Image (cartoon, rainbow, N blue to C red):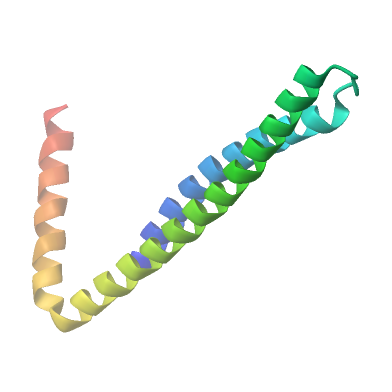
Length: 107
């Protein structure tokens, strides 16, 4: 059960990361396909944008690595807690199930 929850959260995070990565790739593609102009201002802006794209990619990679690490740590902690306190985990699961059932019945 813990693995399924973690995989679902990771899938949502991967979707966000994929969208951000696609955005960065598109900006990079724009930079590469831009017409080479002799104007110094355009060249300076292109270099600045290229640097920002590189920084965004590095930050995105760090953010993705941190999210995966935290998700794995949470899954391990949950697994350990359930193994150490199985009856308490069943009680909590039953209480959550009753609450969800009660709220669903009200609709």
